[in-house]
Image (tube, rainbow, N blue to C red; front, side, top):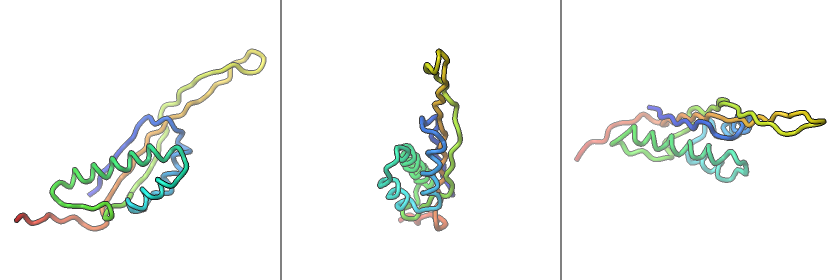
Length: 122
């Protein structure tokens, strides 16, 4: 069973986010959180929020089965380009230079290492 979380319109360029997602792709949740926590990039904050959201979605989706974070891993991590905001500022000899403020859509998919089984009531 998988769970997915998407963070859209994040105001960081996809190129910067891709480096962060390459680090956590395929790692366990605890290891991925540790790697993000000790990284000094500004892009760690939206990635960490999206990761926590995907784990919460997984726990809600599972329902009655107890699942620990150590049993989960990042199955897929991708980033897509969002809309680019175009701004301008004064350039050389009265011309206008464009500034492209890029946005991103972050997608994380979380899965369990072992198959889930229903707990017996009692």
